[in-house]
Length: 337
Image (cartoon, rainbow, N blue to C red; front, side, top):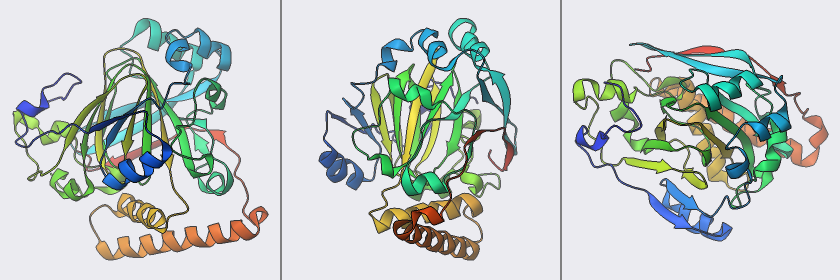
C-alpha cells in the first residue's frame, strides 16, 4: 500500500493519531519554557510574518532574479524497493528545475538540503562542506526563526518540489524548525521510544532510516509493534513545525508546488543538547544493533565536540573553516523497508 497526502491513515492503524499543540505568536522565552520542555512536536504560527518569500515565490520570477536560470543544483531522485532505499543526486539547471516545478508538475526531481542559511562560529567549522545547492542569496526573502540565535544554527536548508514528494520514515540528530513557504506538508511523527516498534523485516534503524510506512501498512494492516504515541499534522505556508531531536517522521507533500526551509539547531550552552546530539549520531551510524559500539561511538563524538569547542573558545583560528561546495551524492540505506 502506498501512503499519499490524502490517505486516511487513522482508518488503517490500530492506535490514535494525535494532533500536536498549536501555539500562536509565542516569544523566545515561551519557546524555551513551553515548547522545548514539552519534548513533543508543536505547530507554531506567527513566526514567519517577515518572510516575503511566501508571496514572492508564488511564481518563479523572483527565484530566477536572485539566483539566475543557469545556476547548477543537484536534485534528488529516490528509488526504494523491498530492501534498499537509494538516493541519487543529479546535476540540474536551476531554470529547468523551476520550469518543472511551476509549469509542468509531476516531476521526480526534488531539490533537498540546499543551503540557504549558513551557520556561523563554531558550528560553521564542523558542519559538512558539500550541499546539493548553495542558495544563500535566497536568505534575503526569508528570516531566521525568532526562537534561535544564529550561532545555534547547524544548517538552514531548502526543500522544493513540484508536489507529491515523499521523504520516508527517518530521524535526525538535531532539533528542527521546519518553515513552510509554499504548498502543504503532512507529517507522521513518532517519539524516540517508539522506534523499535517501527522496524520490521530486519530493519535496525541504521543511517537514521526506519521501516517505510508503506511497508508498515502493507495490505491495509499495521505490521509494526504496539504504538502508544503518534502524531499526524499538516503544515501550511507561514507555519512552523518544531520537532525534537530523534523523533521519527514521514513527510508527504500536497499535489502543488512546495517549498520549505528547515533549521537544524544545536544549543551549545546546554550539556544535554551535546549529549543528545552525540547519542543520535551514534544511532544513525549503528541503528539499534551493536549497543557497545554505539556507546563507544557516542562517547567519542561527545568528547570530540567538547574538545573542539573548548579549543575554538580559546583559539578559534586553530580550527579551519571548510570551503563550501555544490556536490553530488549517491548512497544506499539498507533495510529501509
